[in-house]
Length: 437
Image (tube, rainbow, N blue to C red; front, side):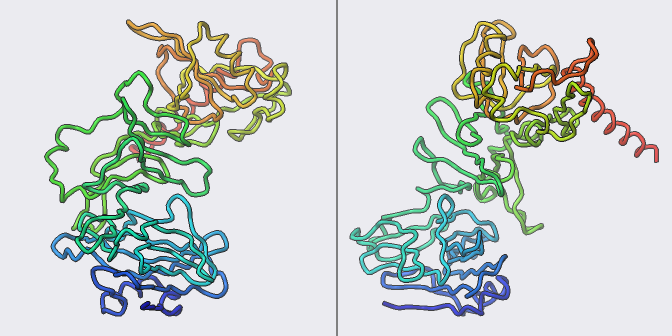
């Protein structure tokens, strides 16, 4: 077995040095890796936060199209250890990662091996296997990267035995296919939620945490690629990606002038259409600003933080201590996958009150020719945005009983609307004053 070990110091100082070394031929293993080869990437003996070690192993050999695809063996500091992964880059954009869904950690070394029997492995100390393709005994001869960005294992006849296109991450490249069995998935930093883009039998859907659908089951069009986009030639659009921070789906093109990728099309164009545009218990206003759902207690104490003053988990399970409060002029972009047909708004509110995990409910009474009455309940108060009145929907949140002003004609609902109006007014005043100045 041919063992090539990359020294630790080559990667410890700066990842830019690695690119220079590759360009000079120091770390160039050609256009493919054959069976029997093993490549080792050392990591620091002591944990170093922010460390990124990366060895670029091969590229697609296409010098006519800029940028090209490159394959790298990487080790990154993360959560007290080093994640070891095989990655594909388009320029400086990571378009595929073997550890996208489940990371493999090592404290010693990161090893890539293509075994004699054709299995591609990522290993750590003492030959601990953290990832594999499972292609042993299938006649695999080498690992190569195609000009489409597809990382493949092929036999002596160049027949594909395994390909990265079958395991999508958060990027869909030109020529790649998604079906009912695959999806795009992105994981926001410092969050337990994640986004998915899925192909279902009768629709395309964006999900938050695999449970809240952005496209309703009435198949109402939420976004559409304009007809002029068809004139864009394939070389211009390089990949489709699901954003980690917003969950927005976009098509990205490379700008040679700016030497960076730019979104040529995005499904969601308004901040308030993002499910996490504001913090929990926040309202996205007409001016794209965030305002809190603030409550007043019986002692006339005004709550300042968005989530402060809401019921605790114990209170949520006690129907005598909580009530449903309707917020006028707001709606939510989230949709409950298990929508229930309900006769009245009161029945919808009671459905949430009887569910300890329910924190909000949306009652739709219908508008127009089709009359329907539906109730959706949520375990997260998010995706709330200000809308025009008369939409036929009622959004309700679970709050402690008595969380309102003592004045008979002043309610929490009215106070929330006043806050929204004040925020919009401040933005408008700032713009006017700025213009005069």
